[in-house]
Length: 426
Image 1 (cartoon, rainbow, N blue to C red):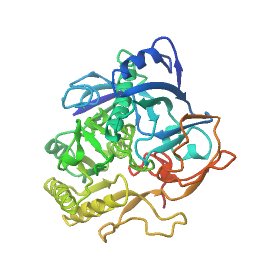
Image 2 (image 1 turned 30 degrees about the horizontal axis):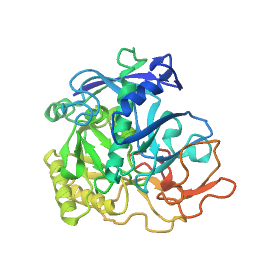
Image 3 (image 1 turned 90 degrees about the horizontal axis):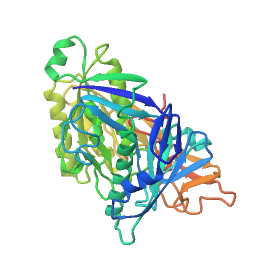
Image 4 (image 1 turned 120 degrees about the vertical axis):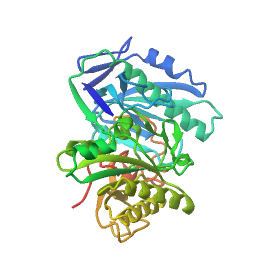
């Protein structure tokens, strides 16, 4: 598959009577976008706010972040199986409003939702303090239950991102990057002397608001399978989970997975990036065994020389991570694991809930239990009512002067397990 990404840089967002892009400014019509979103009968009301880098603004509780994109050439449309029909995407050309993001917030759905500070010490931990954010504040109708609430907010974010992405359809990109993912045999023939490297991407799929969707299918209903990384760039994988904000992969991160981008940069030079495998994270042992067995079998069948494995979440999924690592290593394949840590606030606790001797090469995204003090902000989009009950918060963690103490666990993207952040260790 060959995909061109055409980047239209966005450095500012403003409200206007109609929606359009001029220069590097994205103009958004509240009325037009409201008409799109209020078609969902579960939404009572929606309001919009803008949060730009450097603003003394806090967004919370954050549910998802999505990058506006539009397919302009090739098969299918954005978010296939969800907003577009079920076509295999990942080829042709896609335009990207680079620097813009849609952020969803409002009444809390699950306790594992996050915080984005656009300035101050909290901004140093989240990549979304650097994006120009159009924030949707969604109020559901009375009586909407949790899973319907999550679905409503998720779809609103995707629809808004698709609406904004359409504004880029006829624009001329400032830069174009090309990503080509060859069929396996052709890739091996072209680079016979380079080590064959694969990427195993673990998807959060434990249910109860811990879900990820692949072409519209809940990942817990799938078996491990091969996918082209260019399909993921076109929105084939979307977030539907409310796991801890620090290490969940918002849809934006799936669209911009840095492991994929880094492997493409080295492809054909010192390695052959020839496989991407997606697998799920399960609750029950039998399901963990089934999925990890199948993942290892695929890696062995492809005769890979090395594999990078990334996790999403912590605790229970640590067992899936170690089982994948051990079984792939048993095939004689070198493995590198990417995770984060829950090592206690002083860093002295066991970092992972599971371990295995085969996991001898590990990259960390940081310690999610580290405590940070967030200053009072001039503006809050959403509400701070939940900062004491979201994961990483605690009772009475907001002081009289307006400062808030939380663990990094509460900050969206702070300990990203695909490296879409700023923390690591040597």
